[in-house]
Length: 104
Image 1: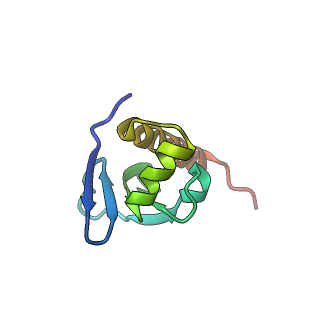
Image 2: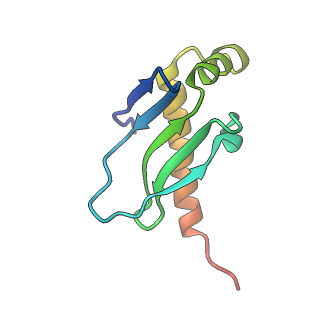
Image 3: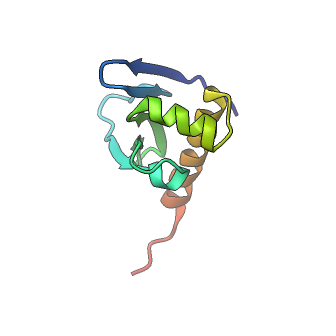
């Protein structure tokens, strides 16, 4: 299912903020590094709520390098489609992690 994705790029810090939805009042937001898991080590963090199984967005550091790696190394020429792919992978990971039984 496609979701509305907003990308805001701050040119002074070269940081991009991918916004999927706004957090509800009182929501606990965890920031987790996911860059290594999706092929961009150190560049991407996710804003999630494990309690609500919700992905609020992504932070992409060094956005220029991210785009360069995306186009030249991974041969993905649509920034929007690449970010949708990363979002879907993170959403699936949150659901799987949350559903995993806790073994003592």
